[in-house]
Length: 474
Ligand SMILES: Cc1ncc(COP(=O)(O)O)c(C=O)c1O
Image (cartoon, rainbow, N blue to C red; front, side, top):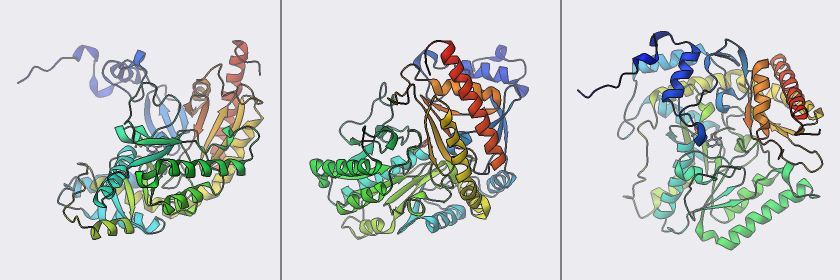
């Protein structure tokens, strides 16, 4: 037998770790996502021990509002007994089956239920393991589709600044936020980036309507310049989430959709964040923005984060075109061991019951209050804009409201706000000079008041710190 390395001196009793001991172990053995080189493999991130409803509890036993709902995913809230028991029951009935040549009931029923909510003719689902693998699947599917249709040169992908589509090689190549490509490679020559549809950062003196015209003209010019016969897909989040909750100008998505249709470019709507209730509907593409994409990618909220699952909803027309091609033997050589995982599909079905059974209605009801209360934070001088849709919002800080300087003095002002809010009982998602809020959809008006009160205090304390340090004159 191979020798096992003995780390036993690191812990007295592994069965009952204190938060500090767990943190210490993580510092020795855990590589956490999105680390900086100088701290990689040694980080002490906030320990979270438990969750209940909209709350989580940290290593000091402090109860915090889960402001980002995990990573935009714990939509129906923590500790839902219904979801826990369905996972247990499914594991006892069938824990796994190979999707290569078998199929389970939960996967078929879930595909049908999801198709029932999708817009247009999107009536088939390919399940994946999360959001990146969903986007990767949609893109590889576009490549396969064009190969089979005898158009191997039609593969370019249009993406936008401010986008986040994942952490696999091809999906990450589409990302367009600051820092995304500073130290990370991407595929060469396949992806073309367009402007972010961010009205807050539109050119000086331009109206929002003129900005929408500008974005559409840029899209049209790009298609003309590259040639429609070389462009396979456009990939866009209906609301750019990790880019800072960027809600596009009215009508923009519909106009882009039409250009794609006119040029036989597949429109892939990345709803990894916006689907399953974040905007009050199962899918936002059709029900909120009035568009019928060719494919929709989803993940996160499909299981409220209880199990890793994602997928792509695909148009019937596209599948029909493949079936009618002259290449019946061409194989879409793509799939994951955990594609159509029965436990993931079973928990997603129960999660969908909860969403349909009241959580979506509640979200639609509470969302205007959520947006209005957060908007009051614009009274604070550090806050340049509060924007959002449904139960997702972003507080963007600026050094100077006139020039809208995105806080050159301290790009990590979001982290400062997060630290203060953490002490006050709220977990925030800091993003450079922004704080993103996307709480569990079950949040009540009273809990929204708590959240906004803490944010107000956390931002005020941050302003005091910046003034005291002499780095901000606001
Ligand atoms: C819009 C969007 N697409 C894709 C992804 C990637 O999903 P995952 O982290 O599950 O791979 C994310 C993750 O935040 C996302 O926000």
